[in-house]
Amino acid sequence: MTREKMQSIESFIESALYDKNSGYYSKNNPFGNKGDFVTAPLISPLFSEMIAIWIISFWINIGKPKNFSFVELGPGNGKFCKNFCKVLENFPELKKSIKIYLLEKSEKLIMIQKKLIENNNVIWIKKLNEIREGPILFFGNEFFDAIPIKQFEIKKFKVCEKFIKFKNNKFEKFIYKKITKKTRKNLNNYNLIRKNGVIEFPEQGLHILDMIIKKIKKNNGGVLIVDYGYLKSEGKDTLQSIRAHKKNIYYENKGKADITSLVNFGLLKKYFKNKNFLVSKIVNQGFFLKRLGIMERANILSSKMSFKEKSDLYYRLERLLSANKMGSLFKVIFASSKKINFKLGFK
Ligand SMILES: C[S@@+](CC[C@H](N)C(=O)[O-])C[C@H]1O[C@@H](n2cnc3c(N)ncnc32)[C@H](O)[C@@H]1O
Image (cartoon, rainbow, N blue to C red; front, top):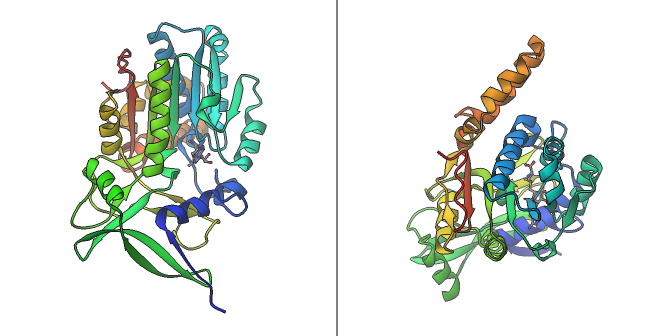
């Protein structure tokens, strides 16, 4: 008996990554050299240190509130948070005032994070309403690239959503289905419809952003986003899949490989502006980290290092900063409620 199944791109990614039993993030620890990929906090602790300094400066800028909440979105293996907690040891006043929340949906990763972080100041949450009221800062590194997106294309002059048809669990072909008026209106609202190429729409990502924005509006605060992405869509299919540090075709090895898409930073900026937020320029990760003083910090640390340690340190910085590595593909944006005007790293 042949078994046929059809899934939209969005629901395919959702089940491939997050299905409770077979999803990639539900079963695996994908991080590190033995896993499938590395992220900035794993490349160098200086990345986390710079973000930590940014967070501390933000807290000072808003008047050192005593009930300050910090939320990390999708903490991965917990490396950023571990380093952040270490930096906080040098800032006892903030350490007393801050509550750190980790928003994570994978039970497997929560276990890994708990083991690494071991800190009573850290609280794991599944929903934003578990956060106390008061000034709040959200931070996500490579969070939005891991949220499923929808894809559309124009077929016979009509906007259609892209689906995948599987036969006996094997890819058979792509299928395109005409969209509803409501979806078309949504795409129109963000000016996403184009004649050629692929239209990518991060509906789920915007829904999460909406909840974040509501929380910030109520409590005052901001959201700092670091991710790989682009400023304006060129109609490309940006889905990519990695397995054991090598490229994988995203609809193959379901549940055994990571799937991500490039983040449309231009769209995020527009979204924040529509919600009446103050939005920073979109800058490259290399620019941002250099403005925060990553080179100066590296020079101080390296003065006491052996030659081997020094070369390792600068090799890792090169990966984070250089234009042909993560330095320019990765972008940074900060959006805040109107009362806050904080531009560190963006000028
Ligand atoms: C690519 S990893 C990011 C890793 C980490 N931030 C780092 O820099 O190493 C994506 C993370 O987001 C989590 N995640 C994805 N969707 C989520 C959601 N809707 N709510 C909470 N966590 C989510 C994943 O389980 C994973 O921890």
